[in-house]
Length: 304
Image: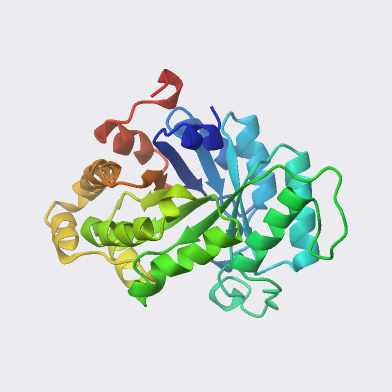
């Protein structure tokens, strides 16, 4: 069952994020997919995340497909203009990559080539609108026709906790109107705050137009905890979560982080309108099984 099919059938979907290597090799992606493939419906392959050069998302997506998992190809507006972005979608669709997650992207000044010229010819909302037109109307942004049009399942990202918080649901509405069919959120550590955001989403009827996948990650060290808390924009780590992870010995933080993530998934499953979870476990793929098993979610190959 594909990601699109599981969501359409009302199943609780699971996706996970993996990072392509900083090199011309496939082995790290194959290893990550091997750890995830029995547990997830699809894997996101990041697109030069953090504005750092890595193997291309489309190439990583093909490697993931060969290893037995449906990919979600990420596409950022940072590095390519509208010509290249449209061309990339056509190429991906021709090669069987159906899921595309659209993001504006981090500015190059934050990455490993701070002197690189940023493109940002389109933003994420404009790109969603463009790709939807290619798929549904068979036309390029220029107005020229496409034959055949691409078959794609369009996704977006959202951060329920970034300021100004009261406008976040409305921001999602713009992406849904532009063409987003599913959305993956930033880390959720504050479930009550996420529940409030979901109430706003439901008030706008967005959960009936777009599948919401809540972001969940397993903190594996105190250093990672401090980085997430202080350096990742828009992520809120409640004090009780911070105290809980600091209360255990350092060599037990990873296990406690996995238990916390499993608890979070269980709570998120109870929120009306949440269609699944997106596991932010890049580099920590081995934690996925523990998170999902602890949350009572069986392996996908068992039909759960």
